[in-house]
Image (cartoon, rainbow, N blue to C red; front, side, top):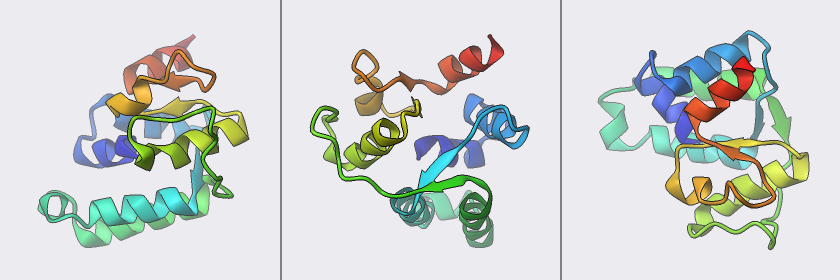
Length: 130
């Protein structure tokens, strides 16, 4: 989720490049209703409102809903737990869909040595380049 926020805040960073790669059909982007709801709530935080217009935030979430692959929310998988329980739904989604997870969140990145493949944005771009 933080990759989406970062992409909206900086059009030149690795997260924005990842979204351009997705739009170029270089990989399939998976989302769920829970992810979209969390993204909507996050984009509504006052500290982000000054940098991302409300209309742009709503349009972005709706674009994801229309064009990304919408998956069913998953119960957290007890084999994959983050130090931050709020991240467990993302890990469960990645595990259920056999997808890799791209995040800048330190709690999620700490799981990179476990069974769910986890990549930092820059590392994911490097993976796409190979």
